[in-house]
Image 1 (cartoon, rainbow over the protein chains, first blue to last red):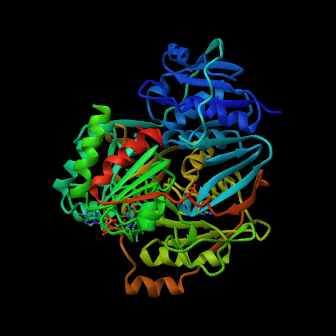
Image 2: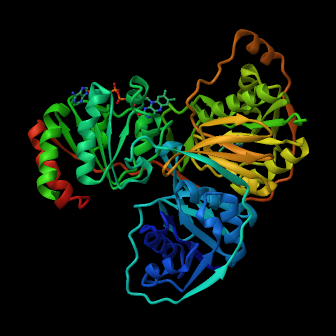
Image 3: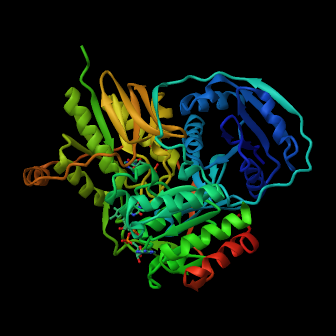
Amino acid sequence: MTNMIVIAELSKGSIHPSTAELVTAAHAFGGEPILVVPCTDASIADSVQSLSGVSKIIAVKSDVFDGNDSSGWASALDSALPSGTVLCLATTRSKDVAARLAARRNISVVQDVIRIDGSNLTSPIYSGKANQTVSVSGEAVITVRANVFDAVGNDGTCDVSVVDASGDVKTAVQEIMQRASTRLDVSEANIVISGGRGMGSPANFAHLEAVADTIGAAVGASRAAVDTWAEIPHSMQVGQTGKTVNPNLYIAVGISGAIQHLAGMRSSKYIVAINKDADAAIFQHADYGIVASWEEALPVFQEALSAMLG
Amino acid sequence: MIQMPTIVVLVKQVPDTNAKIVVQGDRVDLSSVKMVMSPYDEFAIETAIRHKEATDGTVTALTVGGPGSEKILKDAKAIGVDNIVRVWDDSWSELDSNALQSILSETIQTMGATVVYCGKSAADTGAGSTGPGLAERLGWGNASNVIGAEFTDSVVVSMPVESGVAKISVALPAVISCDKGDFKVRKPNVKGIMMAKKAKVELLSATAPSSSINIASHSMPPAKPAGKTFEGGASASQVAQLLRDEANVL
Ligand SMILES: Cc1cc2nc3c(=O)[nH]c(=O)nc-3n(C[C@H](O)[C@H](O)[C@H](O)COP(=O)(O)OP(=O)(O)OC[C@H]3O[C@@H](n4cnc5c(N)ncnc54)[C@H](O)[C@@H]3O)c2cc1C
Ligand SMILES: Nc1ncnc2c1ncn2[C@@H]1O[C@H](COP(=O)(O)O)[C@@H](O)[C@H]1O
């Protein structure tokens, strides 16, 4: 049996809760993993010491983890990690790092895994229109989708050992043009509320923002909304040529449910649709469908949510 | 003096993204599906041609695939690339990421490329492994999800990050994976199409390690259990309750 290694996901300088899901995924593959924490300050590893079923925690310290250069990440991790099968979260940065780490070790990478059954791994292909199961022989690097595996329990006690590593950085950030709004990005949010052409005008997205503020959601859009209204930036677009999101809850308002839109959000855990056309395709994918105009439904929804959470 | 770059753009043939995908037995049946160039590769071609226009040099479109994939190379030629190359060996079938990237890296080293453009992910795999993996094998830098580029003796790319859009300078040689940018991709014109008809595809081979990842089966995603549908705006308060009490997502 080769080593199982889980790389903790970093988010804004601390450890992302989905790291606990990766430990469960490692157990499904077979074996108690070594948990590797990339960091600039090893004390962030304290927060994962209690995760159950972890054999060892290694905090890998390097300045490269402060930035986004995947080359630096991969070289620093490679030098500090034993050989074995590596699991990390399927986020934009980690997918890049996973691909580089696999290439460095001349092994293969399997991205976006949603099911693990021993060494059989299942991922969506053709934008989620089918699933592919592959069998892995030998070591591999695997990225796992967030919100798919249950988080492992919290009754462990594991010591942290610290390793210093350096990495070779190949790109340099010149400037960052701040997002005009301070709103959450759809690809980072646990809840997304998106508007489509049915919103009628970009000004009406304010109603979606109000709901988003109540429930801590990000606001997304269909391509029709992005293409029709200059005020709705492409960064909000969900779908085949926009972002792929996988939140716990996706709320589609005035969106018909075209296949290219579904490609970006169909794997959301729960889907709510508000549409005035009872035959809209989106209802076939919704857990909760509301056949009504948004003008009627959103104020009621907003009030109920405020009462519940306010 | 800026050296004229040898620009390579990777293109892959995939099923039309509008096509219905069916599974026969335990494999996807693509026999009646139209095959096209993977959509993000069109942005990679556009960016590669803009790089050439800014600095001179040549653009070569490269695919790893069977004879059927020559069509997308002709499409690339019609859009304006200079050379078209297909790499294949009849002993290859399903290449895993390690095998594909080894083939690409060997070929690109032979070509002496200065920069490689590719799609951020292929429409079939959705993986996004090829750009960063290839860069690692070549010992080059890379940038992913690129939505715009400026060309000097390095390439300055724009890409979305947590706090907005970052401009990042990538020293050459490098691999740049392209997302849909805020610009139009050029379409082939009549002259381009005529030239593409006559263009010759250069056929190369390479060595490939055997795959350690084997496709066991394809399946349709399990159908979602039918959802609940409510009529009228007033039902929205009931849905809010269900989201908290039944779905536990609030
Ligand atoms: C290559 C390609 C890539 C694409 N990529 C994407 C992508 O990434 N993302 C994407 O979203 N699309 C994408 N599309 C476009 C996609 O095919 C659809 O055209 C698009 O998703 C439709 O957006 P929509 O649902 O907002 O608009 P429409 O299809 O026009 O639907 C509007 C909906 O609003 C409803 N409505 C109207 N008024 C109201 C009201 N007052 N209250 C409630 N409901 C109302 C209507 O009943 C209708 O169902 C792509 C297409 C192609 C060809
Ligand atoms: N067989 C192939 N031949 C040429 N380029 C490829 C091939 N497979 C993938 N690519 C390139 O790599 C990109 C990302 O593919 P993937 O890593 O499979 O998501 C594609 O958009 C292509 O530009």
